[in-house]
Length: 160
Image (cartoon, rainbow, N blue to C red; front, side):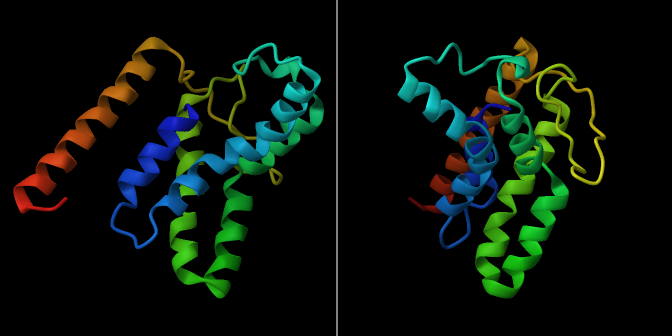
């Protein structure tokens, strides 16, 4: 899924938390961690070809970082550690595995398949890429409808 959608879904799901914007940060971090350093290097070198490039153009380390940042195993370990350090932050961190769960069916086998058990395994689901028109329109339509329902509910209750 696109990074903006990840942030919006997390914001919607965790909207009742005291510091919901942390969830937006956690929801976009798997992609920022994976692609941010490489894209920043490309900007500094003046050579970004495309943000939506195929995996073959990325160096191997980007693929490894992508697999690590999109692993439910790694996310589970981080969540478990956060439970002992800061429980509220641990709950907000659940936006990270939400990102992974959304990516599993919306990444195709040929474009960053989500190896959700990495590094224990390389299992992935050959989903339908999120840039496919009906996935893209369906996602943004569902986001818009959900936001309309939430706003309607808030206005009916007199909330801002």
